[in-house]
Image 1 (tube, rainbow, N blue to C red):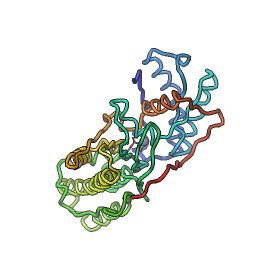
Image 2 (cartoon, rainbow, N blue to C red):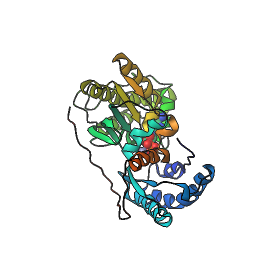
Image 3 (cartoon, rainbow, N blue to C red):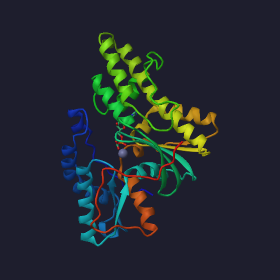
Image 4 (cartoon, rainbow, N blue to C red):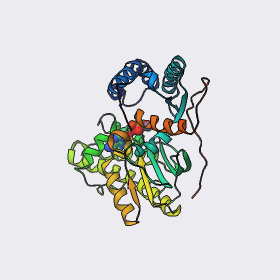
Length: 315
Ligand code: KG4
Ligand code: ZN
């Protein structure tokens, strides 16, 4: 149960630079953490002394930001004598759905965000094997880069999602990278194809209808690849359930297409509510709570990591 939740968004600052600047992000974390903690405790009508443990993201991600969060969590844990539980950010995304409803195991989990595109076979709480991941750009990163290229602002996903509703997704034939070739993803070639298209048709893009067609076609290419590989993995692994999480899970075309395709295959699809798709602390607390309940906690020499490795299942 979520007692209280608070979020400090850095979107306005990152929008000035068209993307996340690691140094700036870490500084903003430092400024935000203390007042945000006070706010959430007040909203939850609770105090640090009432807590069972402190959950904190330690991997994977931008090290400067992770370090700020972990240092703050360590200080609170030490000061209040509370256990510290380090959490994997991707595991938190996969299990964010559980804050809304429980999903039966096993399921296939697709995490699509600005930093990650990873496909998991999930057999239990925290029990995840990697079945596919991006070899270059993440899906959200592709949305952000294409939006920047077209001068649509940051973050690109929501703008493209909205604009694509007015366009024809079949107007421009963009490539579907690595389709039919296993469960790994690649989005940099698709981004390059959009760059190429813009070079050749720059003038046409001044017409907002044409721009909408390009945006819708790009979005459909991303969605087709994500849906095809996820459904294929679920079919091959004989798992009739799919969970989609992360910022890009907010995408309306992805939701619609995944639901249609899965229904045709007799599979169920679960999407967290929009507020839980984006990065949030509730999903991190949820993972910390089940890990703590089964006796896990970490010492104060816990460190962060930009990467994380999982057991791997090949197609
Ligand atoms: O999970 P998240 O909040 O942060 C990361 O861990 O990266 O995901 C942010 C990403 C951004 O790249 C943003 O453009 C994308 O999610 N995003 C979307 C939509 N809303 C957010 N992408 C496509 N369609 C959307 N509606
Ligand atoms: Zn995330």
